Length: 257
Image (cartoon, one colour):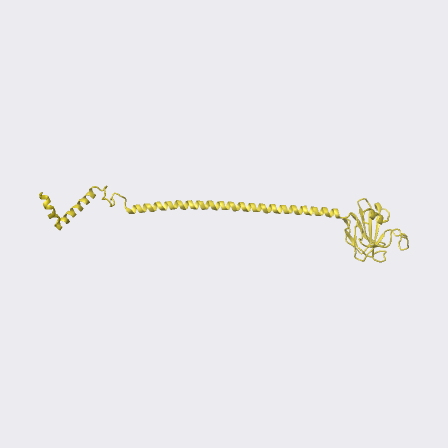
């Protein structure tokens, strides 16, 4: 048996020898680390690697930068969304205003059209000639003789009604006189388009004294002024503004009677 084989058990069996060998191995490993800093024992960090603190700081810096970019992108997206929402709201307000204006314009056109149609219908319905006191009874007729009239005969047609009953213009024309006369009392004279005249006498008061009138306009009220017995309207017709003539045929020709 070789001599070193006989010595191994003896060496290992001594505790002091084991400790000495362990220290030697540890010293050799330390020397290796000092002289070969680029090579580390498996499982342990190399002293050539950057410190752990520097890696953490770098990681935090990178994370903060990434979060800042994300925040900026989110802010940009939110700002764009707000701008789009504002543009949409503005378009909605503009559209609503335009719709309201169109609706108001359409309503105004409809109202104007309705008024025009109503006026046209009223004009078609409006008579061109009416009786001076619609519905009134008649008493003294044109041409009746008697001492009650200064001319010796009755120059007009009387329409009996209670005091205050409205008196109407028989046709369109212009009031050429509204005055007091001893025989006629309160009297209005209307000249029509063709020069004919209609006279309205014995009225209690005037409603109109000048200007243009249309058929049916109220010009005064029944009374008994002047040479009068009992409330009534004395109505005369003067063709072309001349002498008086029977008014009933004239009213009949014009469709009033």
